[in-house]
Length: 538
Image (cartoon, rainbow, N blue to C red; front, side, top):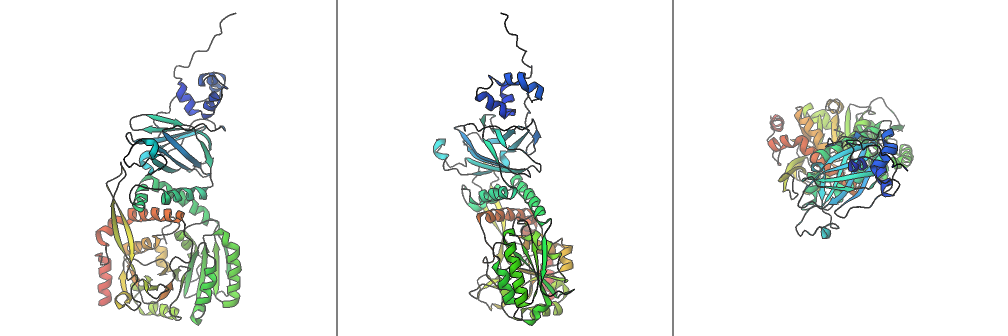
């Protein structure tokens, strides 16, 4: 019998690379269906056009097409590092979480090789966290953040399933794993990433570490993904109007609802007690689609009982505070917008008359955008304008910049007795809270409304006020008092805390240079603020 003749091995064929780029082949070889990757290539891979050469160093953060996708099974995890999970969303969100013992040889990148696409995640753009479960196995007694997680928005439809993962260290050493990637809905993936950001155990101060973790590519990727979800949520709102309608009102009160529908009825009951409210309209915009039926029912009841004009704007998802208010403003039938939280109520029943008196009696520059004193339910002052401070914290994570500095907003007079005159007097302030902002509609539109990059809600109010200040008009505080049951009008979860961490980083990135130069502290030196104060005294 003649000896079998084997086709010569392709000159550039590499068994290891072929198996890495073709996860289904690796699993088939492991199951004994083929003796090697070369055998599969000769029988099927050549005709299928399978890749056989290394892609080289993958471009960071960009998906590279490789081969067609096939379903495969999960392989065992390696002992020196773990890929706990890979989640892929329909819109192209990619989330990875795991740990690696890189205390002596730092993690450089995480390569994901699927059937049909590959991507390289730069370790410098990942968050590093503690992993108490990995610390005993490391044999290293010094503190170290063994855990890692990353997020990338590819903005294209991707396949999940079998995946070859390469954890590459700075020295070039590699650890190859074969996990199974699961699909997750886009909104669920956003929640997973933000929840991880808020709840992961860190070395040192958790809040500073979370803010530092998103500094750079990770934060930008989360913002890009959130922008896509925001656009989707506001794409086709459901709008219905209740009660009397006019062509024009003295002001349009815009209230963003989330998680607690009962505050619509409470506000209508409280605000309807003064006849002047017939000259105002309410626009309730909901970021909780599950509340739609309840809100429609409550709006009908309120229109019958209290007789005020109510418009409901309902979204299919959580668009965030900024985008929700921007959309609601489009349905306003007045030249004056009042942005109000659902847990804000009249301190004086004639508050609307006082609000109109400010508009009619003060110079336009002092009324274009202003806030008012807000009070806690115990009677103490909650808000009389906002100012900025900067917090600095040394970084305890190797490879990061030595110090993290992030901005923080503070409220003038927070906790002060209710009649503290120096906080109640009309004056220009660096910013006012989004719990109550009265703004001329044309000025709001000239500023392009609230910046919609912020996730869920936090710092949009300060951002709007600084946009106004940069455009030449400082925010003011005028003595039109209201109650604010701070935090009672919506629900707050770790996911929202993660969003706030991203927002604080984004606000610092956007306004840090200006604030640190001219707006730090309760007595800032910004020339527009000084000029406004001097003009008021003249």
